[in-house]
Length: 218
Image (tube, rainbow, N blue to C red; front, side):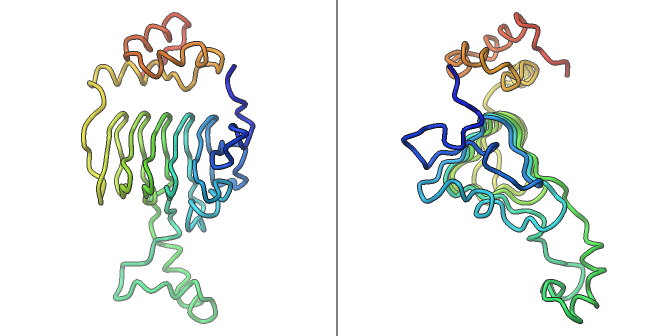
């Protein structure tokens, strides 16, 4: 039996772990099923404490089955300051004549767009993701990493700024995994093959997807 994806606290004895999909209320945050956040100081505050500067229309989109460690933060586009002139000071935010004179400058600033995280992504302790970054399926973000650029699928990155450390599988195997897309399988099928998903090979995952007609064309 798989855990209930609608339960905020999937582990009754551990309030530090929450499933994010049933927790978040902001229309600017979209999270897939079974993605969890772990924080002993208050995991239920994720929406306010871990998604910062979400003042604009940009969204944070996170896929399914992601593991997000304590202190991971997503900086949204509202954190951006104007850089086209002499000063980066955000005069506009304080209103009054400052806003009247500068609102058009802020409105004309280019946006990096939505921040998009794929499926089955693991974020290490206190990782930070900058606005508009796209992180591929199966990636691993090392503890303390500052992610300033896109991360390819099944790639491990770390450092400040985060750089690729290594690719988890060969290109051919990554294509197998992306086509199999196990995170989109029915929950009962994931449960039936959880051991293989954790410890099997890309070929094993591909075989299961093929047997059930679940492979996706790419």
